[in-house]
Length: 266
Image 1 (cartoon, rainbow, N blue to C red):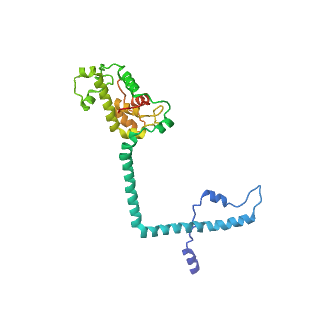
Image 2: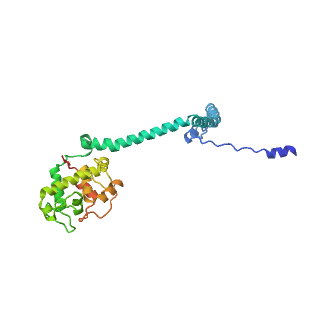
Image 3: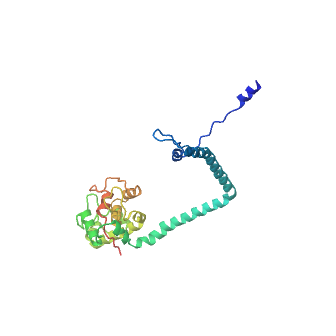
């Protein structure tokens, strides 16, 4: 009776299953096949390796676990110090790259090599840019005022002119071609500075909902058309929103239409 009770109290642990890679399991299959004889010598080696495999995995797992605990226990402060300095250096590199290197060095040089690789064809002149914008915006008429009160050949919003510091009467503005051209150039300079990060990120690149390659001239005209819609378009990577201008033209169409011009504001 006592022996039976002892046997009942003994709990046999189930055999532990090991997560052995499938490829390794296939290699350790015995050489049993209906069209080929078995290889006793090879099967013997396979049997030995199969018996050693669980021990090998358990041993490696134990070593890694104990070494990790030991390293963390005795080198925790050093590890945390390295992580801290890596984070600081990474943040510094990001800041220098985005706020110093790109704005003050890359923006001043035209990457001609990149242009030749990606943008096919010659850049159209800035004079051609002015002419094409004028034709698209106001059919080339300098003294036009649209039904929604946009003014001149570049169709300035009166509120935009106020922000630029232009307080002349409407009639005088419409009759002064030099003033309109100067305002447009000043607006391009302002937008180039205000939306510099979009130019640096998307200039000479392809984007969703854009045929061809995006260039600086197209980006500037997108912000001239609808600044709020243009921001959403670039931030989202190509989402088209809004109804566009009075003609129904949206920012992605302006980017396509006015890409490929040389913006020379010197």
